[in-house]
Length: 158
Image 1 (cartoon, rainbow, N blue to C red):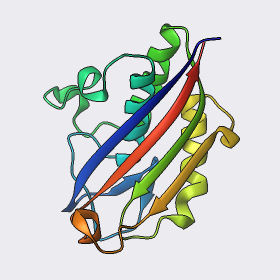
Image 2 (spheres, one colour; image 1 turned 45 degrees about the horizontal axis):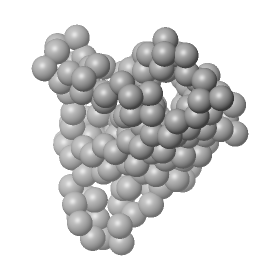
Image 3 (spheres, rainbow, N blue to C red; image 1 turned 90 degrees about the vertical axis):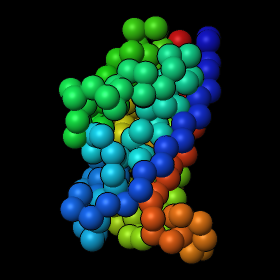
């Protein structure tokens, strides 16, 4: 069995007038994350982890922010495309562990829905997806509410 591990990281700044979408869930908040797509920091980190594990580059390579086709794109659609790309190389997702770093809002009430979205989009059991949320104790750009980041690790197998 061929087993590979991938790591992904993403960051986006907060911006007024945008929806806050994390893990495919729209979360009530005064601002959202700025990006060419919907700026779902969690799904971008997961997509990068999966692509990295399969040695397929990163989301910027496959969904460039200079391509108008991806303007305001739904990151769940992009994640499904990533899963298709790794499947084309003979891999499937084994598990995902991810952490969102965001001072506010609190994400705990939304984590189960995020896990459900990710599991469905990646064609795995919800038990194969873990999502955590943390703050940086008011330190750095996330602590100052300037933006959010996410880390993800995954295992894919052939």
